[in-house]
Amino acid sequence: MPSRRILKLASRIQFLITNAIQRELHDPRVGFVTILRVEPTEDLREAKVYFSVFGDEGVKSRTEHALHQATGFIQREVAQNLHTRVTPKLMFILDDTQDKISRVEKLIEDAVESDRKNKDQRSESPSESEEDSVD
Image (cartoon, rainbow, N blue to C red; front, side, top):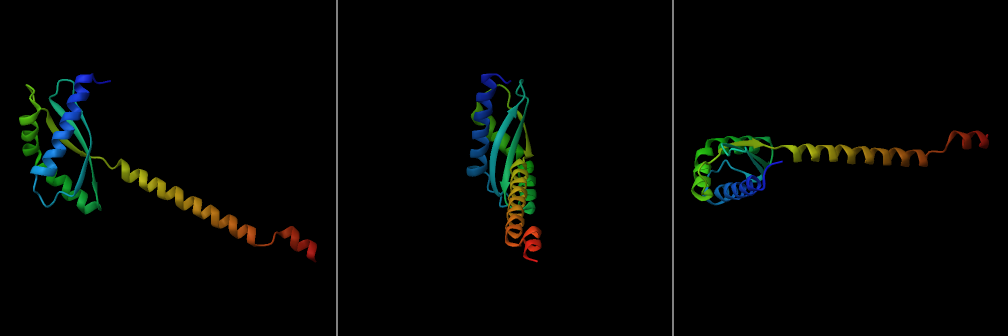
């Protein structure tokens, strides 16, 4: 478990990165980005920045590429406002967890709908025992 100081710095870094992307980074390749979390190392030499992008695979790819190219700029913005002796080296990582969750939810919805249709079809067709008693 990271210390409270590391957690506070992670929160501050996340805010600064978000601010830099929204207000300072004027790259048309950057789509609708959400910085999900920042995980700095204990010595603050590196920080993993997890982000998600709204859009299709092409938008995600372009945005990821643009963020990797703008890492130096974003890191400089963080360094100017973080006020620590060491500024962590930022590593942007596309987090597709939400996409996976959405796909699983869709599969579950489809399975429930399929079950419902099968149940409705079974209840509409007469059962074999009723057909035998009619003869």
